[in-house]
Amino acid sequence: MKLHNLVILGTGGTIAGQALSASDNIGYTAAQVGIDQLLAAIPALAERGPFITEQVAQIDSKDMSFAVWAQLAARVNHFLARDEVQGIVITHGSDTLEETAYFLQAVCRPAKPVVLTCAMRPATALAPDGPQNILDAVAVARYHGARGVVAVCAGTIHNALDVQKMHSYKLDAFSSGDAGPIGYVEEGSLRLVRNWPVVQVEYASLAIENIAIWPRVEIIMNYVGASDALVQALVDQGVRGLVVAATGNGTLHHALQAGLLKAQAAGVRVVRSTRCVDGRVLPLPGDAIADSKGLSPVKARVALMLDLLAEDAQVVASRQA
Ligand code: ASP
Image 1 (spheres, rainbow, N blue to C red):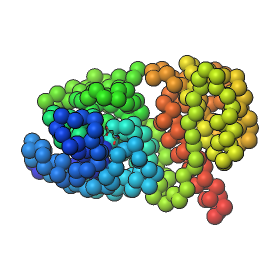
Image 2 (image 1 turned 120 degrees about the horizontal axis):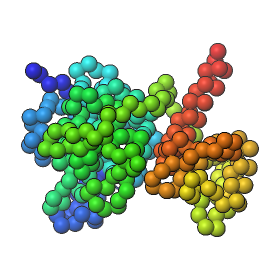
Image 3 (image 1 turned 30 degrees about the horizontal axis):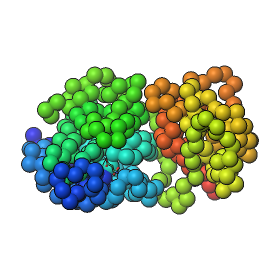
Image 4 (image 1 turned 90 degrees about the vertical axis):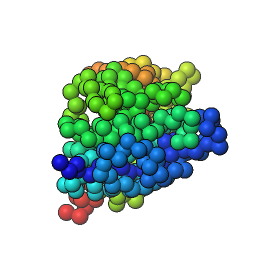
């Protein structure tokens, strides 16, 4: 039986990084090797094709931008719409992978698998982790029953909603927190430890590629001695949304809370997340500031930006009606 095409999109990252010495795992430059060259170094892929490849960007993901996001979402939508495409693998830097994963899930809502993968060591390392991660990502994208955006790293499959980078250096750098991973890739086979998640994040009607100005949403944090100074400065600059990485179960220093409530009263959208790595802000009746519905601060920021974009689109549509 002829296998359907898998699309592999390159965006850069450490997986495409190069160092001067093979023993250097940290002093490298990310995003140097093209996607075709990366794949050519993995002979085992030959049996898992056919593939369509495209270099969508070549950046260190610390520099990920809204423009690249828009382009990536457009290419993902383009390929997902083709009947002969089974799924998509995206090579990405590990630093902001969880934000891109959430963004693509929210705006593309793929019924087919979209698998993000990365590496913690550059392509030139003595023992690079990228080739195995790509092979594993391809196995996931080829799995019947896989759908939606997931991340694959170090043999573990994470849901876009749960995945978070937890370690700055180890190869197994990601966690799904309380939810746990979807499963594992073992020698090319999948071992699922929970049902494949049905993810509902819905902003698909947004025409992402036409967005000229993304709403400014910033993240601030609660900590000892926090004040309202940053909130005030951001409000003065016209910020439209603020996500606060609160302490514990959404607690805020009284001075920061006062600043946030003032900002909210002035029309700024405020969302409370937690700086705790696991757990979520559990809402209480009558909370003055909305909670992030379990999203981490960085994902809550993406959700708030998309919310504001959807609101803006509605305003434009009602003006045109
Ligand atoms: N700074 C790199 C990036 O995110 C780190 C990595 O890929 O692991 O592109």
